[in-house]
Length: 427
Image (cartoon, rainbow, N blue to C red):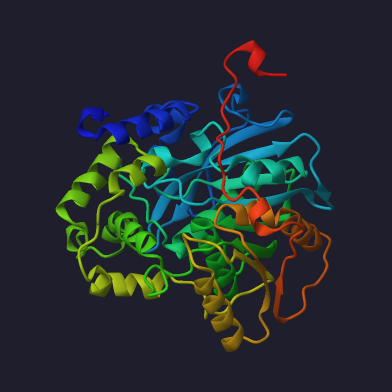
């Protein structure tokens, strides 16, 4: 099932490291991530199965937190039903509203495009103290979707589910329906909720704000989009990010456009690499190792008519939103330039001047650090939404202040959370 020998040496090393982070082995071998025909036609938001007490000893979680996993029904970009997995991270002392424990739906940044890239089966839940752990430690119940195609690998008919990478409206469905399913599984959860996302997930929660304007759901209090993916192709996109996006979106576009073929935009070598990702379960590190130093996309791939259509369908910004939206981006982001986010914010504010948008810019901050550098600010914003503090209509732009010279700060994430294996490795 895992043809490791077909991978280059560096990619095999990456895959070995990633498998070490799998809490329950491959999702392909974990019965939790499978569904049967009984769930084929249940409506979106329906709970399909729940594991109330996940074995936390298999994970690298903060002390005093508990874990649950669920599978629920969602919708693909084109509206077909699809089962999706998610985790629920529980604090020991949850914050409470009148209607129950306060919920934050977390939408993760890029983990990969194969089923084994699901955060719910990664020991540290993929983004650990960058967001989900700290949300729980601050008392919020975290409901975090894996996204369709990550986790549950086949639908009720046994057909493989392809992850529709960066199809923000599809991810927005996954976010909203994960909350509804979690509320069904655990009635003690509040009916109100805030959504928070980073990078790929930042685009997802912005799309959730747009979704709320046309398909509102009860209890939605607002969204926080941090370093969001707002567009797929743009002349301001860093070249490496642009070609990586081409590689990552190719398989999902085959779902969305039946006449599209990945070979239309990918080189022959990249088509092989994409197949290896699906066959081995490689996550983000393996993906990067396979395309590093190569040009996975064909020349002028951005001019492909299906890519152009995809861009128009999935980009966020310049569309109506409902509820408050907090957007945060660092001006030293080498993965997604802040200018792209600024354009999306301005386009929305110009077309919809009454939209409730706060835009916070972070000096000297790059992609992942945008989460940690602004954490107390978005935590306060969440608390205000649950407290019923109104956000004024219109656009409010601000810039955070730094206490030390920018060069004095740790610039990037340089560690990885892993379980202690020997007694003396724990205090």
